Length: 332
Ligand code: NAD
Ligand code: UD1
Image (tube, rainbow, N blue to C red; front, side):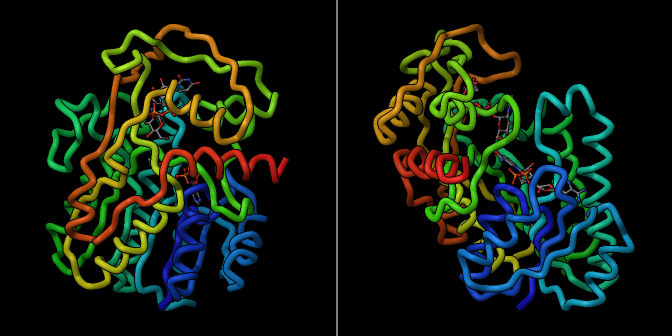
């Protein structure tokens, strides 16, 4: 059975392609490479010993999508393609709205044309805004504080309206917590160019000596050690969640929403200390002021995904730290 993976060369998409191929799906990828490299396709093929059908191009390009659906009988789409940097979305809101929303509308229109009504969408825990309590459940109130988050919330709304208009759709909306780590092989992973925004890539660049020290954004939060707490999830666990969600969608699920997290929060300091221990490296840091827009703590109640999809995260924080570093060392 063939599935289309938009943004399949990216961090989460590439790990999901591996799991899809290993689960026996045929994989068609469309990616414009605005935040990834074509080599990833070869790496996926090397890990799985299976072929990927790759189209380089934009999901906003109706003619391209039309061509893909005309050539391949696509049973379902996993829609990862999107821009994801929160700070950049504040300074370039129109680019974010245009890319993330236009691509989704174009994709959905072509899916309707080819009567493919099964989709798994990459949303984010960012749609919970400042949660009213912890752990976060799927029925918590939704809000956002930046254009990136707003694109996720709008797309969730678009998908809901689509389902209301036509109950033949099967839609899984996955709200990811904080994916980190890399595939065990060290062939695919995450290593952004420049100065990273997110904690784990920053820690790794300090450990490799590319950056001098980590800035810890505040140690006066209402958390056990004062630093921010997040639900870090191993990227391979997250990827496996997509296979379960896809199976559910293909079984005729209607629309549903799932938190993909571990249910356990770790502080910035705990992550730094675990990283140092398992990789036997030093990560010098200094504490600085809070980052605007950050919340003290955020972690999932992942029990709904377990009950409905039979999925739960298996890998711990040590594997996340080891595998994330291993990828960067191997690809230096
Ligand atoms: P990524 O940037 O590594 O991957 C996204 C991929 O989509 C890239 O390969 C990029 O080239 C491609 N792309 C972007 N716009 C495109 C377009 N218009 N047409 C074709 N290709 C396009 O990001 P990721 O971390 O793998 O995230 C995947 C999805 O998950 C995104 O939608 C992101 O918003 C969402 N998400 C990510 C996180 C995270 O922490 N990484 C958390 C929550 C949600
Ligand atoms: C960020 C995004 C969120 C997105 C998520 C996953 C913001 C405000 N939020 O979430 O929308 O869904 O990434 O990609 O950007 N930290 C430091 N020093 C650093 C970097 C981070 O101390 O150099 C701290 C932060 O204050 C936070 C924790 O580390 O407590 C995690 O930060 P980060 O990795 O950026 O993820 P989120 O803020 O959870």
